[in-house]
Length: 602
Image (cartoon, rainbow, N blue to C red; front, side, top):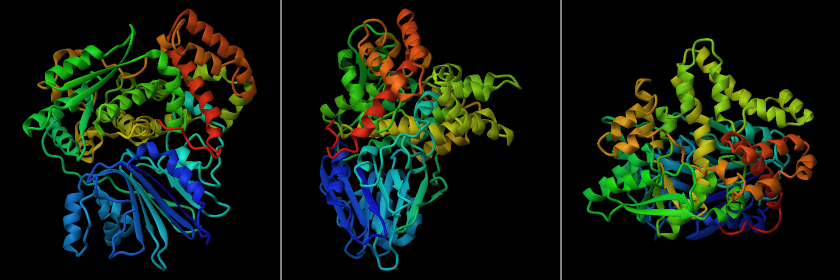
């Protein structure tokens, strides 16, 4: 697991060494163990390494003596690297160590840009081919986008730059920090940018399961690969057990994140089972809660899971007084606004994991999307024929429903969004189009969630905020075998996570199996109520003077919304205010990232 960066252009001069050093420094929190950036006429390639597989080997960028001119960097893990290494060795390739990424130059030499089709894991890979007559940069990410890669192409000089994180990308000359005009509407309508767009003009994300080929001076040519071939064997519990055991193997300490719900509980139970059967030390589990009496605590459920699985349990009680400072740090690490208060919890949780000596953490991310766990999915299925279920589904994704956000906009901004279209409009259209061509609602919603929302909203957040502390988060539910298995189940089994409840029947406490679904998040409606620890921060970020200057929001209506929240704390009003505050903070912060100073350490 690492942070990677690089560039390619048709220019003969070397990239600015100071810019490369700044880009590397800005994402070094994710790769504290080794730093190296190479450059030459018209190219650069670098890595900040978090050493997990063969920590003493695997120096990046990877180069093999018998393949001069081919360099590679890797962010992530290749779980089938031993199998690939054997196949490549049989074809005459030799490797200096057993690090998973060392084989990438050889794999590329054998298969060219199709090399990523052979990788099983979570990864963002860059291969730079400098051989005469073949100069090109090849970028690839895993099927679900677990490891994001941010791109910028300058049409004026033809250069392309990439980095694991947006702040690092902004350190390159020529990459501007200009928010998109629709960034505010996107944050309110979908909580964060979906699809290949980010909140910045000219900065995109390589789509999940995509490979991009970039020749000097040309724009990236992006194509989607077919899904990685996986042949799961057995029922849901068997498939998940196999993936948990694969992901629990590492050359560094491994723990599990236990929220107290079904998904992380299953991962915890199976990982603890594996530790016992292999005579490994007991599994350590981590759960975040808050000091004081706050609504929605899942601590008791997490303790029940840990007791049943016989883990060494760590309950991290965060002081709410620290939340304002955590907000600034999380927004900076994410590089673009994410309106879910869970970001603060995620950041604090992985800080505790790292401080306790763990470098790898198993998580339960991806289960709801694959197995139909969200209430909005059940509501879509229950909607009668002729009902506008797609609009209701889209509103359920929003930080603020359409009527409320349009009420808060100035007339000019409301007209601008009406002319250009909202992110919500595009989601509604995709859902309706899927149903129009015969997809059932389970398939239509699952496809939307896994293709767009899961990578952008969950996996990018988990990647950035775990790597902010040098922790590799591994989600077993997102592995190809589990994805293939889930998609092959009948609609009834992947509705309401029925298959997962059956898988957990003998592994989890009844109290966990019977409890209603509850997201692992921050109780934001209480945190910005009178006397709440985040009230002053939100009030400052949403001051009338600031909003009037921005020209997109009616300051008087935002003030009335805040007054209503203080009089009658409400989750939806609080979520809207939180999204507005996050966007304001991000807007201020993004411009500072084009200054010569580097990001502060986590």
